[in-house]
Image (cartoon, rainbow, N blue to C red; front, side, top):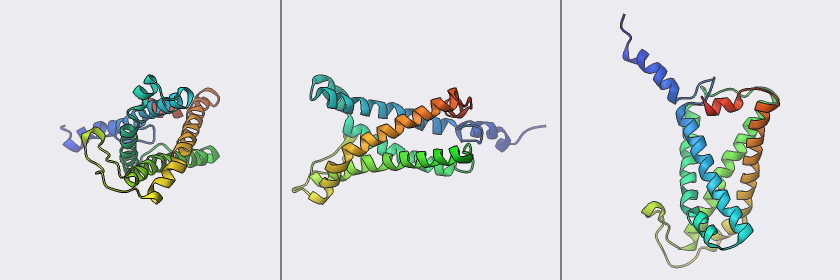
Length: 191
């Protein structure tokens, strides 16, 4: 008995999409790629705060604008992918589940607001912005103060709030594994 193309594609599709048992390859790819990029971003910021303007901080931080733009694009794509898989994703049950949903909402909000403020500030500055050589913002005369002010005021502090929330996210994943012996981390590692 021959299986239809749809039946043969089922297991393959399940590998890429999320399931109630774990996250698919696309969700895991977004998660770990963004984790690596955020680690680089925060390493550069922390080095700059700790060491000031040095060759090392310029090397690590030299990609800050481009990677920030990349992270902004990735969070939008990841959010769209997450919404498309919402009914298939692993469930978050009980009070801890509600706390996890709230924590993830805060993470997503900050991952949008922090680079969003930087992009608004960049546009308001009138300076050109061409990540990867792609002209996203052309240079123009004049500065738009109301666009620059929120980024100057909040980008730095909200970024460090995001770092604190991400460290809390990591701590909770470890606690789930070590203290409560459940497979929360496994769902994002193996799917």
